[in-house]
Length: 431
Ligand SMILES: Cc1cc2nc3c(=O)[nH]c(=O)nc-3n(C[C@H](O)[C@H](O)[C@H](O)COP(=O)(O)OP(=O)(O)OC[C@H]3O[C@@H](n4cnc5c(N)ncnc54)[C@H](O)[C@@H]3O)c2cc1C
Image (tube, rainbow, N blue to C red; front, side, top):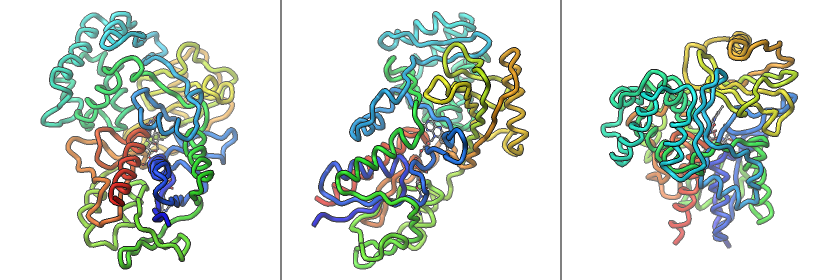
């Protein structure tokens, strides 16, 4: 009999973990997902018409582990719209990486950029050069804003390039965000080559992008994914794990807790050995992301399907109509903590509408508008925070999720890497 392994959480981390375990053919996997819909913080919300994601997501070419795991469960790369890294604004500013090997892709991109003075281009190239020379180490770790000061970045670069990229990648304002984690992201994306820095935007909803195909793939191999099945507590007896919520007759040899950090901490509560892990999880604080969806007769975007926005509340705008969605549907993304957080939905939607009217001339009224707020979208990626390991001091109990220790901020790639690392730990412990 193969040992039973339970994975608690049907988000990207839990499902990547389950796929890796199943591929080993050494264990039987059951995934428990409390929600009706798979995907966790990256899922479709079907109560709206048209259905939309709980938040617009963007992937990059450097998400190698996610892309590989998607391929393993048969997801076609065509479900992602691939664009060269382009940072464009409605006023004509545009920085587009050239399709050339690194570092030429960026050097040529900077040389051809619109809206940058020569002093901006030189300062941006110098930042990359200086970080590369330091092997991408920021020691001691400190806020991104301080490093931008130290490396002489101009106000235009800060406002149009580094601060929006920092918020997009770390979901933490540059004044608070970890420069080390930001340097890791730049190393593996912008500075790594044109393929790694490509933008990959889902053309299907986030549940269809990976969680649903992963579940079908697991089902075909005899593994189980149970939705609407919340695990309320974990007990251990004689080295066997019992789950309050799952079928009462199955004990598990190993358990992977693949929930968001704030759902993991209560599950760890009964175990004295895990007090330290729980403390580090509870010390994490969180940042919001709200996506405001607006539908117009016609999209005002004529260039790239993703543009930056200035003067708040939103930082980025996506043309969903050109990304597999209905014509005229836009997604405006309001990331990280800001003075807009306390606004009621209607006031935020109005502020975003006004922002779009300032950015695009003669914009008519939207025909439809909805917003989805995720108050705890990601952990705050601050300098020097302690993130727990996949392995816990309780043998057989593992953690997976975007918040566990790793080089990346809370992202789909971070979640998948964590899930794969937990699976490797489980399998190694069976040897
Ligand atoms: C609005 C928004 C925009 C984002 N944009 C981007 C982006 O552009 N690019 C990017 O890479 N990342 C982005 N992220 C981050 C990314 O979505 C997350 O890092 C990733 O989805 C986390 O996956 P996870 O599996 O670690 O956790 P989760 O997605 O939180 O999955 C945990 C799962 O566990 C389930 N669960 C919880 N408790 C229990 C229980 N007791 N029993 C059973 N199941 C339980 C939950 O329902 C959930 O499905 C964004 C996040 C949000 C919210």
